[in-house]
Length: 436
Image (cartoon, rainbow, N blue to C red; front, side, top):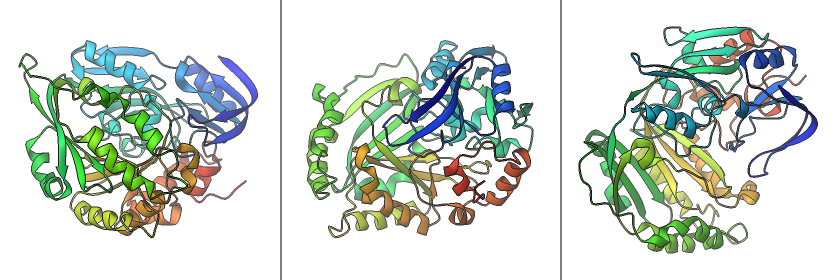
């Protein structure tokens, strides 16, 4: 176990900083127990890619990335057990070597598993990543270990917990046989893709839509399971498509000063980077997961019931196209789909949902990005839920209205952590706990 004293923690895009007194790098569960037990206040962090201030702000911090081993496989049950600091990309590569897959993967592969689970990370056309947990060890505030399985009622609280019930230590995932997807991509007018969502969810194994604000277009990605040996004539588009992020950075450089430039930039980006079609095949991981983020950015994401989404979409589209409110949105807005579950703080608790991401390519000026305010106002109006690892302003009073099990979760949290050991200042506000 390594310890650094008195330093400054900085998020990946340098938007969040905090002081700490002790920072630990641990490699074993015993070390993690020891640090938790003797700390008054503690938070755990990985690659620092959250846009929400959930990972730091306490005297003691643990960099979980050195706690990253694959512990075991169970071939008959098709499960893998890992330490919570393992990076998603490493986990998926190990799973694919066994000819397995985890059926719903996030957009990026650089996040730690513990952080991804705690914040409800998800992919599309499946469940939250946390729904594939069959067993985990949770280190409680007193340093003891609580083993939890998918047969225990408490699992529904632990699957998405923001790291406030305890520290996820080891995690066992249930996998499925690997499969190959035939991916087709291309642009469609909003009037075409929006009415077809339910039809496509029934027809395809994979559906993702990149909406392009201020263009009246979406970029539709569908995937169908095929035999791995089936020949697909692949076309990945013009070679210059790989320069989209660099071009976006240039076009959006001054949009924090002149927001209206965004509408023009989006039309140029659509014509240059989203107007062609693509076709390819690969495993879910190979075909759909971004292997690098490329540049820092700031994100908000909101989730709404599948049945309500068309109404919310049209309202949002009308609002951001008003030149008076300055809520011009950088492209793309990522539209994905999650199946209903029973996890208390899941975005999909009790209903199938649609998620819609909102990105600011200028991370340093994200505080003045009006789009974050507009999307939150509209989604909250319709009972939408914010992504726990991304930007939002809602606190306890509003969250209690949109999460059916909010008070139950708060009561469980106080029971497991009576001294608020796992709460930083940001989370104290979220749960409306008095400052000490």
